[in-house]
Length: 288
Ligand code: BEZ
Ligand code: FE
Image 1 (spheres, rainbow, N blue to C red):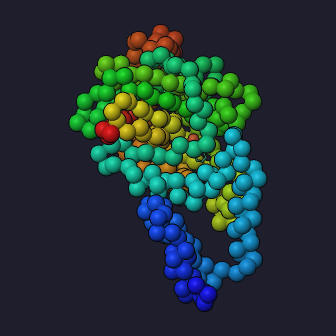
Image 2 (image 1 turned 45 degrees about the vertical axis):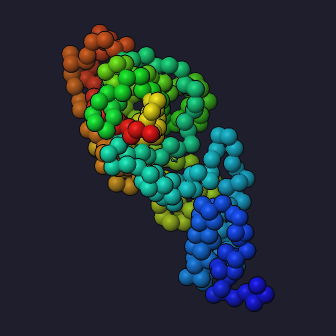
Image 3 (image 1 turned 135 degrees about the horizontal axis):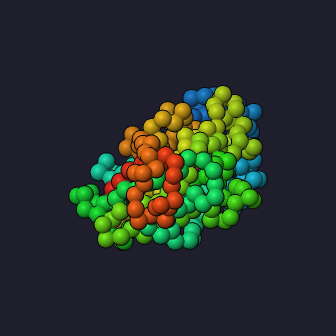
């Protein structure tokens, strides 16, 4: 097409895409370009604004590394990661929620009833529940990959003071589908703001806080893997998570209990002599 105009450029673009192109690729790329063109037309985007957008992308690329995923963070604070999660969450299963950039794969096994708190200060939390299918039957042998920040609000991968796998554990549930572990009550923390994503947050007058949470990846043969999080109902940032990760079914009450109520059979049984927090969180997985 020789006579390209601001009104026909989207159709011209689609005309350039080969008929042999994979149909899904054609659909996704075509829709992306249509929305980009509409965005430029709707906002009457200026050269300066276009350049700022390109500089933002270049800034993300410049600090991207195996430990720093600025493009993912951008997707998170723009709500895209959570929207993709919600588009593919089933109402029968536990909601999925953002993976975030701080999960370290290959955590050491955490025995049933094991403890992740170790010598760290802060309130003791006992988390337990059942991994089940959509009919409510336990899923024996399901695996739970757990991670969270230390009480200083930093993940092990962000903090030279922590071991590589501190506050990470991989638990295999028993025949009854139950899991249980102790840890420190997670704290709220900020996403990194020293890169281009921080500039966007500041430009929008937005804070960088996430409500406190425990992260889980739950897997079992024959079931869809689930990446999710648990949030305490009294967290001050619950209604303003900067990455939009909170869902109703992921908000749980952490109940304070007396030391005498601490159950038997866990790593810390017999060693708890102050009140502790308790949360019950069952996870429902969809079959493949
Ligand atoms: C996290 O929960 O670890 C997280 C999620 C999105 C962006 C940054 C951190
Ligand atoms: Fe997190």
